[in-house]
Length: 128
Image (tube, rainbow, N blue to C red):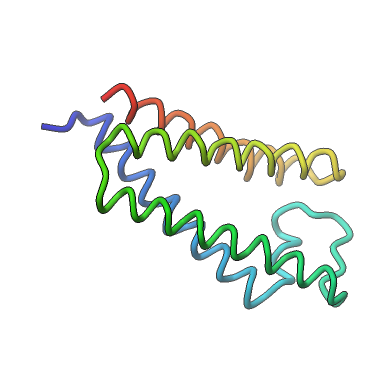
């Protein structure tokens, strides 16, 4: 029987998996949305920038699908490892956004918060 903490961590994993897929899809179809995630001076009308944003969007969609796969077919420990690995991706996004001069609301409010939530959920799943 799962504990309340394990259930909460699993729900968080589902929310992040679906959320990152939606964020990736939004970025793929509406590259201007990338500016919302703290990339200052993003010139989304530039074809090179659009191509790069498409790469990031596909990364997000793919990572969300990886999480869905482990949610549907793996145990709590693998789910935990996936969340911890994912928190490294979001930590990288945090650092890139901060070092690029992005606003604190983006690098702290979006990326760093996601990093902490993913790492905490991953730790709970690993310890379950």
